[in-house]
Image (cartoon, rainbow, N blue to C red):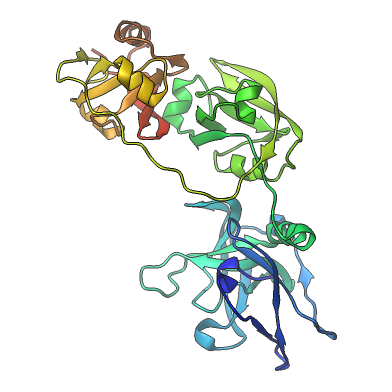
Length: 369
């Protein structure tokens, strides 16, 4: 096993052992989403290593990495485990092991060992400003890499589950808006039409608390949990909706190959006039028929001006579209204002904000006046 980025676009791959034997390698399969590749060589008398359990790793535990940084073969560097289950941008399917082990170009694809001489990870990437190690190194847990390698060995590709939702982190302020005592779970900001989640009755503003009987502590947990389920499997899901828990069953579908999606810009304000919503500190107007059709929504408000510092700090901008407040879909200015009147002073409200093709919840504390 090695990293997918190590063998990507390679025309010829050579594996060199410590006894100086060299072999031509064949790529059995590579998975860019986890950065794992499986190679095969025709050889006998190969040394082997013991695979450890990354789940038993503890923060502060010593680990060592072996690789060929800058061409220096079999270099060993040491450090400690800084964090476990770390999520990185664009890497939703790997709960990385973060260490402060010195990792440099040439370490990619090499093993991360614990002090029991067991491999617990595959060194994958670093965060750096200089190009060299800065104490932020990330390794793929060996159990995750092995699961990927098993699928690559069997079929040459990796099959993952999907349910068709867009999620975001549940902050303490958003949890308060939805009536949750703790910010645990994955907040659904949008649901793909006719996707498994939609067919199961999952809605935007739902918070997924458990998936397949396992607690979802952070939003980053959910993509990995869903991806691990075999497509076609029926899975129980525990939701939080409008102040109460709810049970649904979703039939997991197969995740398609990676692809790009165009982003449509937010509609421009239809006019300069709008109603001032004092408790939010914004000016907004109802969407006209053309805007409703363009966005494919049944209702919403267009933000024409942001006046208060609280609204600006929450990230609201002119041209944003407000689709829902807490668990209620916005149908009109009058209905929206009435909902805000019912919110106690000093409480947060969760606004579902559409910008381009993306929608996410933001929490804003209402003006107490």
